[in-house]
Structure formats: C-alpha cells, structure tokens
Image (cartoon, rainbow, N blue to C red; front, side, top):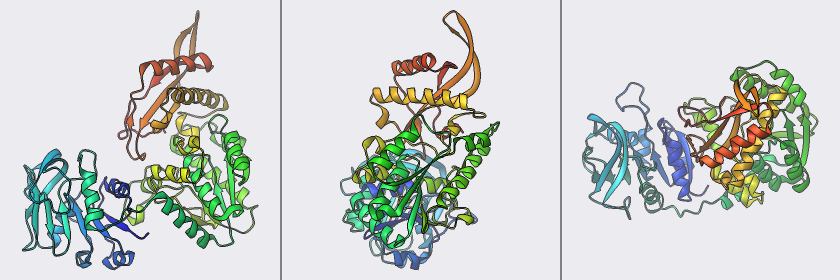
Length: 513
C-alpha cells in the first residue's frame, strides 16, 4: 500500500472502528500491536500513526506501553484517550485520576482549530470514556487546542514533532464531527491523497496472488456465502483454472443451497467445482449431540476430514484459499499478536491441521464486510450474492437448539425460507444485516382448527450491524411479523408458535448457539 495509517492497539474496543473510519477516508489502515518496535514501524513507511484508547491506567502494573522511539520518527501521531495520556506521560507530563470517571457526551470548546479541527464547529459534541486525565503537560512545545467542562487538556498539539492528542473518541457515532477530525488527520496532517479504493485493492491483490501462487494449484472451500464467493471470484480472476473449488454439503445448509452454488459457480462462472454430498456423514456424527460447542467441533472436524479427502485428489495443490475477513480474525485469534478474546470457535483462521500441509491464501483477511461486498461488485458477482446476509460456517446447526435430526432440520429450512422470502418481499433484505429462523426444541400446546396440537416453536431473529462486531435487534413492522408467523404456522408442519428475539449483541450473540 502506498499510503497507510498504522493504528497501535492498546486493547481498545474501538480499535477496529478507528481502522474503519480511516478507510472511509479512502486511506488504508492497519492495526498493529501496541509494542511494535519503532524500527518495524519505520520499515512500513506509514504516513501517520494513531494510538488507540484502552482500558488500562498508564500507572497500572503491566500497563501497555509503546516504544518511546516512535515519537522520534518524524511521523505524525494522534493519541486518542489512553493514547493521549501515554504520549504525555512518555514525554514527561503527568497523568492523574479524575475526580469522577467521565463517560458519555461532552462539549469540546475549540480554542485553536489548527489543521486537526478545520471545518469543525467551535463547540462540538464529543464522546468521553476515561477515568484518568492529563494533569500537567510536558515542558515546552505543547499547545492546548481545546477543552471540555471537566477536561482542561482535551485536545493538544506539539508542532515541533507533529504530535496531536485528544481525550475523546472521534471514531464513535456519538462524536458527530469525528469523521471530519480523523479525515483532517489523514489528509491535512499526514498528507494522504485518499486514493485507496476497492479497485486499487483488487489490482494489488491480483498481482500478489499471481506472484505468491506461481504455477501451483489453489484449493478453496466454497460455501456460497459472500466471503468465500468473493474470494473465489478474486482468485479465479487472478489464476483462472489453477483454482479448484470444493463445495461440501454438510447436511445443515439452507433450502436449495447446493443447487444454487453449483449453478452460479460451476455453470455460470465456469470454475472448477467439486461437489461432495456428505449429508449422511455429518448427520450421523451429530446424532444425539445437543451441546453447542460439541456440535461446532464435530462439524469443523468432519469438514476437515471430508475436505482433505477431496483435496487429496487435486494434483500440484500447494495453497488453501479462505474467505477470511477482518472481523473473523479479530474474533477468532489474537490479531497481529494482540491479546483478544476468542468468540468464534468455528472459524478456522487459527490455522490448519498439520497433516494438510497447505500454505494459506487469504486475500480478504484485512477487509471489513462492506469492503468485501464492494470487491464482489467490482468483480461482477450478482447483487443477490454480494448482498447476501452472512451465514455461519456450521450452518443451520447453530440455529437449531438441541440435537439435530433430519425432520427438525427440514422444519427449520422451511421456516427459514419463509422468513427470507417475506423479508425480501418487504424490501428489507438488503438493509438488514441478518434475518433468520431458529428452531427451539420446545413443544407447546396450540389450537389449529378444532384440534389441539403439541408442536415446536420457531424464533425469529433480525439484527442490524455494520461489521458483525456489535448488533442491535431490528424493529420489524408488526404486520410483517404477523405475515411471517402466519405463513410458518400454516405452511410448516410441526410448528404452532412463533416468537421474536429482541436481544442485542452484546449481551447476546447474533446466532443462538
């Protein structure tokens, strides 16, 4: 990348959001560990550095610290919240515990706009989230750009070293002019042209894929979801018939999924597509298993076995391609060496079984979902594929509570098909992150006609999100919910009750298992 802003991550829940905001300014961003050596950063030749916030106090034992030499690199630096405090402490200032933790909205009064606040209102709303604050500035050099009611040194600047610091969070939506502030840092202060686009990303990746792969064959596990589909299209454009896609029917796919994937990629895109129907193998392994994590592991392990058997038949295959995206990496393994909680145990981004002996090819691993979709559009994928709602690796098994059976899976498939159909008819499918049905192993009494029934419950789930990291439940219109409920109860044998899930993430997850 010709222009890069590096985000040093100090454990903030907003580090990924900072990276997204930079990319929205058409500048490439990369998250790196807080303790990355200054020389490593210099070698990356970034246009700027942002120090993220974080949950620690700079005085806490084992508080994350950056290499002090980064302040001598001559590269513009913006410290946010903890990043500001660490900058000030490192350069000789003092940080103190505030009288009270400041959390929520505040008004920043800008005394000196400088380059950072060009176009920003003199009094602007910002979002605070800190307990410590700057008590004393380092000797000489720093100027105060702005303050709030509780924070005197809310925005500061050291012109000699091109250092900036802000106590608030410009990356969150609660700072309405935050995007302008980040944009000013990227373009006015760091001098970025803002020419990073998905077109430029594609051209770079095509070159890198060709250079990496050479004359070897590549194997890709194609699921039909957005990520694997875009990865397949990108790699196919780079190396053509050297790409071999394997599509495994694990028995927990959506209705008619196998037929759709085979039609699109095998026939329309003329890709090498190996179809493996392993339904019986997966369902026999899942029989009687109701514990969610066990189901995930069974599906993951069996997939590797089936995939290994199919891939063994492909000659000269040195690379395994995956549709891994940035949120997958963030939620599955420590990103670039930073400690992180593992949420998604079903992702295989943590590595492959040693016996498979493939080199990984993950051309989308630094893209967020919206960026992946745009790449798909640029590559000519149909809109219904590009905008397809995310679908989990373990398939319907994570939307089926309790042990799966062929009968109950059919109930779930039919119900889910109705949900998607009605959401599309309402014109909401492409504006909602995920909408789906969940099978509950709960039987309730109902009345249908003149007869009492004792059938299962289907839960509806609809959430809105930008990247899957957090999510809010969608307030679907009552009449739409009514139509979905009526159709499921009338058209799906074995269901007599439909409920709606109104839980956000956190505290819940998007999926039920």
